Each structure stands twice: as structure tokens, then as C-alpha cells.
Image (cartoon, rainbow, N blue to C red; front, side):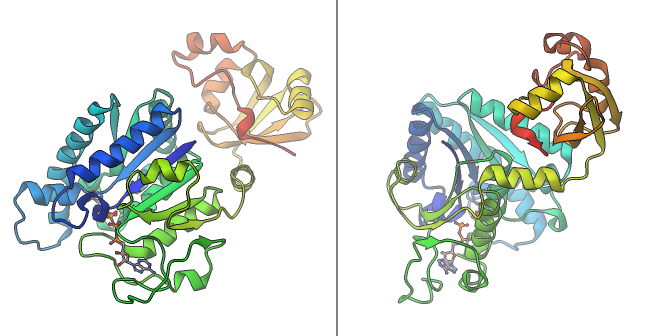
Length: 363
Ligand SMILES: Nc1ncnc2c1ncn2[C@@H]1O[C@H](COP(=O)(O)OP(=O)(O)O)[C@@H](O)[C@H]1O
Ligand SMILES: N[C@@H](CCC(=O)OP(=O)(O)O)C(=O)O
């Protein structure tokens, strides 16, 4: 199972003013256990600002953006050092990946971030992701790691997004101010009634409160990933959730991941066209195979890696649409060639397929 875990500042501090090491040990043991069992965990962590503030010995805060950026710049390295030290106990490698909103909007950066994260997961390395607070302006910041975790879950097409916080889940009202509020165990769909349950900006240290968690749940479930919001206080919570135990609030996916991906591919502008020979056209039409460069006879249009292209057969009829793994200029050079020649031709390779079957919609 591919699982994205988001840890809010409230979880990392466990009700104290500092990063709470025993809590972090418990969480790291859970992550390492999942990895050892063959799962693919990824971590989205907050706590850089807190760690910076802790390092400076808690000076009075003015809460300006400049101060936040300074604290994050001081704290990010310390936060990462803590994770690396704890991961060492479990023989787990960690990799720091700092992302900004731009990395999700700009296709090349998006694909490169995806490649890096995929490499981490396939090598059994735990990516430790945070927003790159030191370089982002307020106007273009994602601003909260709940949203970031949903974007990461979509990027990785995760099987589960787990958001741990200091509340046991989504309640009928903010449990801090409404002691009689009760837990909502299941949210089949994010409706206006659900939005209405989110209170204000959250705990005194966290960002966003339940509002950004519901937003994250909506983003991820719309792309087919279930989301659990649960308490970070429960020991071994992550392996227990992965084993199927029910805790907190579960948001059910609004569609399947495949359907979401299909809708996305079909909704994209298709700036390119690949003309296929008879063999490739038949393999795609009849077997839903991947398209290899060998089956391409001509490349039309200007497109980047990851953009949508139309696939047409020798009769000129469009038979499929898909996401290309190579830019137009690259495909022109490798069209008609065997996949083993790609690296010699281009000096690098993104794999043997021009369009992978997972990225291909037959029409
Ligand atoms: N309906 C609700 N159910 C649960 N918690 C809520 C609700 N509305 C607001 N909250 C608040 O959201 C807080 C969690 O958000 P936040 O402080 O941003 O944490 P984190 O640091 O984990 O992101 C809870 O402590 C709780 O006070
Ligand atoms: N990027 C910031 C965290 C922002 C954030 O969303 O915080 P939180 O609500 O505690 O998950 C940091 O590392 O301090």
C-alpha cells in the first residue's frame, strides 16, 4: 500500500512546546514497520517553524511572514536531523523534499518532483516532505500542509492519505469549544454540511484547523484516494490503520483512481499527435498495450513530457489519448526505434514506453 502520512505541528509537539521525541520515535517506528512490510510510506511533515522557534529558545513572536520564513529556515534542518537520527534506529533512509505550489503548477517541475518521489519509494527510502517556506511568498504559498499532503497523495496516486492531528477526528463541532460534540466516523461525500462543521484556524500552534483538513480530504477523495483524519495520540496508529483498524474519521473516495485519471487525461488540451503503424495501433486497440517508440511513424505538434497526445492509426482515425513520457523533440528522434536505443539516442531515458498503458485511454 502506498500511504501518505501528514503530521501536523500539534502531533509533533504532543501538547508540549517542543518537538516531542518519544512521539516521533513511535511514529518513525510505524513508518519503518510499514516499509519493512513492503508498503510505500511517504511523510508530509510540519514543524519547521516550531523547531526554529525552539532553537532560538522561544523568543516573543510577531507572526509576520518574514519571521515565519526565518524560523522555518532555522528549523527545517533541525527537523530533518531529528527524523534522520530516528530513522537510523530502524535502518531507514530518509530524503528531504521541499515543495512549493509552483512545483504542482509547472508541468516540468511537477514531473521531476514525481520522478524523485517515485525513486525514493521504489528504493525503500522515506521521503520527508514539507513546504519550502523559506522561498515562498504569502500569495503563492500553499500555506498549510494539509493541502500539500493532498497534492502529494494525488501526485503519488496514494492508496491512503492519513492526516494525524490533536483531535480524534472530525467532530460535529470543534471539540475544544463544544465538549458535547461527537465523532463522525464516516464521510461518504464532502457536502456543504461537512464544510459547516469546520471551525476557525485551529490550535494555537497549528495552521488551518479542520477547514484545511476537509479541503485536503475533498482534493484527495475526488482523485480516488480515501482519507483518514485521526489522533496522533494513539500508539502505533499508522500500522493499525493500514491493517484495517477503524480510527477517527474516514472520508470515502468519490471515484476510482482510474476514473479520475481518465477524466483528467480527457479533459487536458492535447497539443500533439502521434501517428502509429498498424502493429502498434492493433496492440493498443485489441490489448490496451503501452505504446513503444518503435510503433510511432510520425510526431506532430509541440509538447512537453507529461502532456496529453492523440494517438492515430494508419487510417488517420484517433484511437486513444494518453500522457507522453517524452517531449515532442525526443520522440521525433526515437520514433521507429527500439526502446533499447533510447538512451544512446537521447543520452537519458524515462523508460521504454512512449505512452505507458496506465496513462492511456482507448476511445
Ligand atoms: N469539527 C471539528 N472537529 C474536530 N476538530 C475541529 C473541528 N473544528 C475545528 N477543529 C480544531 O482543529 C484543530 C486541529 O487543527 P490544527 O490546529 O491546524 O492542527 P494541525 O497542527 O494538526 O494541522 C483541533 O485541535 C480542533 O480544535
Ligand atoms: N510548513 C510549516 C507548517 C504549516 C502547517 O500546515 O502546519 P500544521 O497545521 O501544523 O500542519 C512548518 O513546517 O512549520
